[in-house]
Image 1: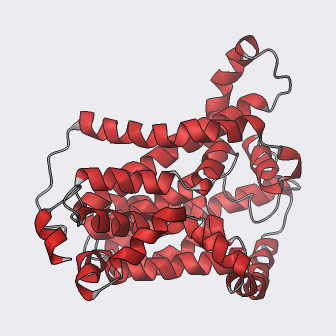
Image 2: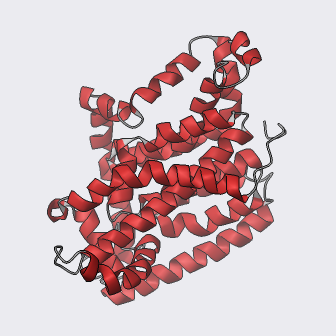
Image 3: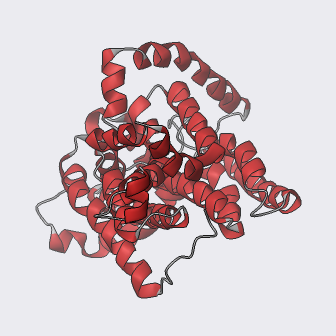
Length: 348
């Protein structure tokens, strides 16, 4: 699929797609940032603490994900200089940091959207269908949640988007980015490594992948040791915490095979999910998009499923399937003459 001729995209076109993604994310997420009650959210309070450099007392699951909090802290500094003058009715020192998380998360999610848009095109989708797929992904309730709150999922979604793009486009740069960012974004990014070593070997050969993985892994371990020193926690505690996630399997499986769990899965992409049913209705329809998703996409969905089961948060982790869903959705939509090729619509 990557051999298809692609339109030449100069920087104004890239910027237009990026701004489209940013617009789809920033507006709906603003009320979440502005009105969310942080008092009952342990996740958000933990990441606010990490952004302030306060690791003691923060959950072992969250303290080793400092990249987004560090970016938010950097953005918060200039915001603090003018915040009180612009919004004097909002007392409290956390508001500039919350706003910084909102800004950083929106920018990262828009970047993920740009990568997904390009992946859709690489797989043969028309630009209009790729843009509609971007809208289908970014109108999810989880986009608003990830963009508006002090969370780190925006970077992790970007990592998944880069991983799928690396494989479908044969991009060595994207492979390197994933190997460097996956582990510090979330420790569960370790599950992406075997997948990338196998399916990304055509983009970047194993010896070079191992070199970058070693560099990324060494930096990640050094970061964890430094955080443990700041928090006064023995390194063995993180091992026990990781094994504790296995206890979520029983809960997640029970929730998955329930009416509530089915509703939670459907709500990830909502009624846009019905497009996949259209694409599965006969063999000709399946042949239009399944080869583009390929075994790499199927196994990436297996990794997403593992995240869902280990975390217990089916919907939020299921949203990591967005890069694969976007490609499937865009190619199914491209099959119709109003958005894509008439020849393709006749074949389906």
